[in-house]
Image (cartoon, rainbow, N blue to C red):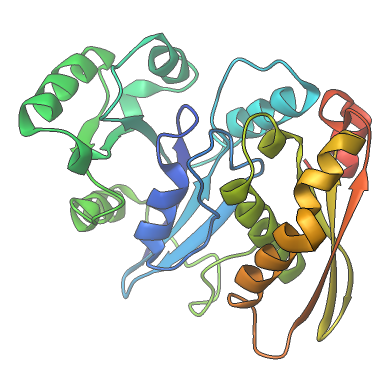
Length: 279
């Protein structure tokens, strides 16, 4: 039996959460086209006959300008320590630049695997050019993959299993995630809000479940300004209604989801509020 913790790191929006879901074969992490969607560590567990791989999806490393940004950066950096394998995820559709280089300098790149994601979005010539540019990093291995189409996923898993040290499984074989149910529902609510809001509003939203008396679940949506409250509620409650419908589709039958919007002024910029909201 082999087992390993595998950290997925990289800049925002390179597809780490989509990759995690593809590796596990199930939705474990919320996905959005907005950068910095992931704010906390999310663990997904892949169970095979001879191995268990525990993947850690991390927030995208970026130049922080808020207390929230500083906290999620710290979370990502902490997630590279005390793991067996680090995968540096890079976006094939974007030029390899200083941001990727900086992230690579935060880890022992000689032992890391570089995963070139989104190869389905570019030509073969562009993939080769990207791999050539990435070769300067001196990583242990390079894998071109598409988390969206599944291309290269099985080959990557096979390499990770080969690199995993001998050891027992760390989680029960039926377990695929360690995210508590209440936290998962809050993330599903935030995922839907990310899909329908724009400009700076997605980054001003936090969600948390404040009551869980099944089948009744109360989720609080936190915004930074009074003007944002109306935008999240929508005309005659239209936005909240559509968000509730989509989230309930992903919850067990019979769930009764209540959504409330509250204002916590400039919470992103206040370290105590960031911590209170669970980041």
